[in-house]
Image (tube, rainbow, N blue to C red; front, side):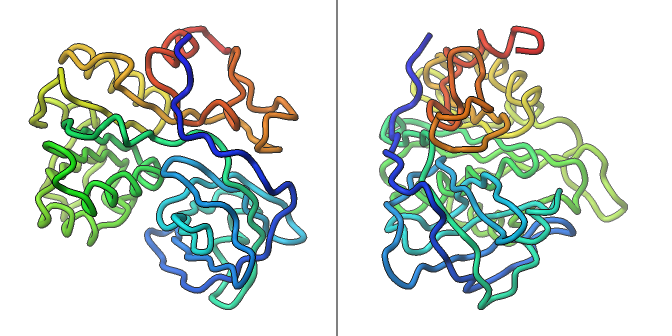
Length: 282
C-alpha cells in the first residue's frame, strides 16, 4: 500500500463554526457556488483537495470539497450540487445567511510534486469543483509547471460547470478540452467519454503528474489510460468518495479497506487506490 498523499492537516474543530454566505452563484440547474466568510476566529488554512463538513442548521451536515479560497481559513468557496435535504438547504441559503463549517479534513492534491512537471487534470461532472483549486494554483504560478491540460467530461452541456472560467483558463495558456455524453442542438464540441480526450492532450508521461476526480469508473479508465501512456502510478492522484460522517477517522463510515477516507483520503495516489477499487463491493 502506498502512503496516502501528503498535505494532511490536523483537525482542530469538532463543532461547526458559523460562516456567513457572502455570495451565491448559480452554476447549473442543480449546482451553486457559495463564498463563505468567518468574521472572527477562522478555521486553519485549507489545502486544495481537502474538504469541510458544512452544516445547514436544524437539518444536518455534509462533506463538501473546497472549490476555491481557503488559504487563510477565513474565506471558503464551495460548489454544491443539490441532491438531498442538506445540500438543497445549503444551496438555497441567500447571501447574509449563516451555515456551519468544521474542518479542514482529509488529504490534499500535493501540488508540490507537480513542480516542473506537466500537469494533466481530468474531471467528470461535479468532480471539476475539487480540482478547480489545482487549476487556479497553476494559473497563479504558471512558470512553476510545464504544459497544463484540463480535460472535462459531463453528461450534457447543461451540466458543465464554470463555463466562463474554462474560456478564461484557455485564454491564459491552459489546454482546455470538454466533451459531453449527450449533446444538445447547440453543442458543436467533442462528444464521448472523457478518456477519449487523453489522446488530444500533449504531455510528457515521464514528467507528468495527473489529478483525477469524478465517478469511480471514470477515474479507473482514466488512470488506466494514463498508465498506458506511461505515467507512473504514484504520479496519478484520484479523489475517492465514501459516506463521511465525523471527518476525523473516528466513526468508520468511510472505511475503504485499510483506509478511512475522511482521514487517509479523499486524495490517494493510484498505486494505493487501484488494489482497493479492483475488489468487488469493498
